[in-house]
Image (cartoon, rainbow, N blue to C red; front, side, top):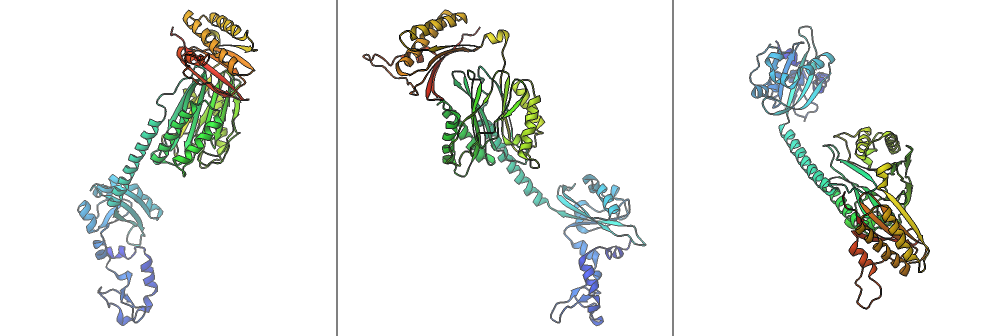
Length: 548
């Protein structure tokens, strides 16, 4: 094969430019220059002699190119030429042999279908960063060579060694994977290893970090039993990615658990968190929803700092969205948060989630929330089953581009024998000297009807007497005594109209009061107090029921 005829047909803007200026080169100057027999150009009297591209010795040029060059022709891609760099990399290749037999490196890399495509379409194609048989990594560019009367069309292969670049990229990816694994490990270690299980609720949660190309974020959730049958539920999302976001998340989650022990309303908890978020990192913001469930009220009281609405499906299957009130994210400062409420009675299910579950780049956020509402309306089963179904319905996979956290809670409708284990009894206290004896008699009758052991019965009556006496002495009307039993504990609670919270103190021998709360704290499994809406307070204690 005449390589000069092939090389003369190689495309190039320089060759065409030279052809257009050929008339500008004087006949007596042609052949002048460092390359013999090559036409030259001189644009001005002072410019250097430049050989015309049409008459450059193509074989000599390609033989010296550091890149790997091969020329094949015909539908079977017979070898027309390989340069010295190609021979050094893969060995001598016999001219005229078909590529399928003589170029095993191309077969290994799957380049033959690409050569067919280039030959058919007449358009160049590039295959990036493929590791060849010699262990090096190359980028292959395949350019069509037009056919003429003597020869069929061919393909020029130009392979650039990008091994150093590929290895550097792999080191970078390995470093990113290592950092991501560190962040994921930190994130998971900061999330609850096991959710607290309240008496009246069934809860489940799931967390899925973003895919391998996305750094882990700061999503978190928590379930906190407050005592007295109440439960706090939290979900949040720290803006940003990586270890820093996970670390800030851990600090906020720890702070939420500490603040929750104060048994404050949800909006006051967010107010405290807002100030703390600014102190942790003034440039970091986070969204958070904090809710409290009280089985006596059958409602979910919540506050939101820039977080997505909570979804609640009632016993009829209707899904409600808690759009208001919502304040700005934590860390912005200067905002007074407020609390709202939504019914959550027996048979209801609520879902708290982060934006990774519903936000998509090609969709409006409301569309994602509406799709989640539809999925929740048809999701049945345990909280964990509902968690999994909601994640699947949202199309979340292992390579999802954002973190996802979902918290599902159910307030089961209990009937039959199970319902007998969850009972309530209440008595309005009118005050006066007969209030304490009346409360003791009421408690004794209720605990007897609930068939509690004698020892627990007596302790319950004693705790009732002390809590009522404390309320009569230090509180104001209206007063109320409430007894509640679950399958795990007995809860005694007294409410009144005064917001002064009692505290446990050591009574001196001569003191006539101050021993009631100390007695309750000694005999009960736990006790506490909180302010109630409207300016009153509730004081409670609980006893763990004996197993069996």
